[in-house]
Amino acid sequence: MPKQTRILTTRLTAVAVAAVLVTGAQAQTLDSTVARESRINQDAAASQQRVTRLAQQTADLLAEYRQVVRQAESLAVYNDQLEKVVVDQRNEVTSINEQLAGLEDTNRGVVPLMLEMIDALGQIVESDMPFRLEERRARVERLRDMMDQADVTTSEKYRRIMEAYQGELEYGRTTEAYSEALPSTGQTVEFLRVGRTLLVYQTSDQETTGWFNPTTREFESLPDRFRLEVKEGLSIARNEKAPDLVTLPVPGPEVAQ
Image (cartoon, rainbow, N blue to C red):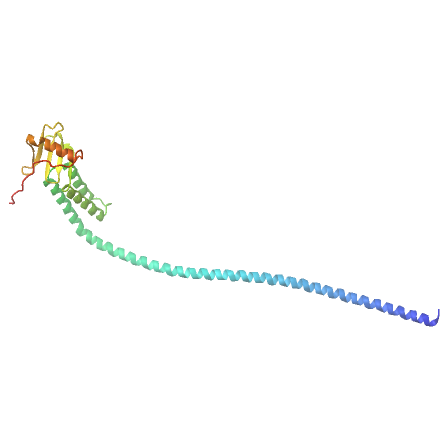
């Protein structure tokens, strides 16, 4: 081989070796760069995860804080309202105590009045015509017993007394027929009461007809002419017949002494 050719071949070989060496160095540098880039990416991803986690924690804490603030505001409003309620309740208790103190004074004045009313009612029953006498006497006795009962309030006692008076007033505006024993004989007869003005009676066989004489305060027989009239009146009072005029004995007015 000529000398020039060998020299050229040697130079080309050297250049090739140098190129291989340069390529190997670049490859190592590239691998190193890729590795660093990969680590950077991994670190960035980890950092992003931490940032995301911290952001979520921050959002949770913010939501919790807002919830606590709302609860605190609600509690403040509730406490203010509760304080007003407590103040009102205290005022109510004070008012009730004052009313109780006044009620005790009222009771001391009302109780004697109610006892007098019961006694007066008993006198009315005894001095009135003797219709439903046992029933009315029993009502007065129940009122007297009620006054000794601690479980009945003063207002309830007063209400029952007024009901008894109302019942007595109703007798003056009503007419009724009822069966009861005649006080003078014990025989059961049919009574006809016309308000508080007239009290007549008749036996079931209509053989005996009589009345309560307010002047003598005795039960007395009536003439036979009143037999049919009293029978008619009893039928009307029982709603067995339509209302009609009947002739009955009515006591005349008494002269005031």
